[in-house]
Image (cartoon, rainbow, N blue to C red; front, side):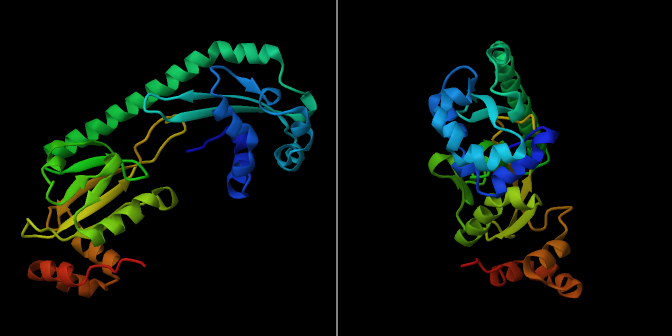
Length: 277
């Protein structure tokens, strides 16, 4: 996740969408250096690089920038946050006075980021607990599909779902698992809930896996939770079956209505959405 102050948003957008992120030697070296303090361009680059490297000559200076200072902070879970401040090129290199001031407040920045993460995780756990009381199995996952937390009812579905290597969420139904992996990996693109049919070997009724993205805020520096995954029977009260059927299988309103009732199981057995090649 990346975010910027309003006046820097156009530059961040260009950095990410024009291929400059992979050529940004400042950010790469900042993380590699792993210094517990703020560092300037002169700490990260040689004078020749500052004068000739494309990140300076073709990206920063044409935008009126060219001098920066930054630091990296490691979260409790091993995540890394990079804080970078850019100064207008006309103002010259960042001074030692500015560096000393930033070093003084760096511990406060680190504590604030970690506390915000802890508060957010507590809210996620509260949501999972509430769903548990409603009889709904649920787990919190990252964009990579790794489970960060799960309620008790979720663990009761070990016949259908389990955690694999690196605590990755896996569905025993391979076709459904492929669809779930695709949906989770694309959360940052679509940011809309997804529903996937799951053929259950131990349940009379088919199940539905709902993947609900969590909107992240700029303050969620180290937050690793990107979505809540819930598993419910297709006949679960309140589940909009017709809307789900139309969305999953490209059916008309009438076709979806016909599929309701005694035909639900046969419908989900035979007309699962094809897994993209």
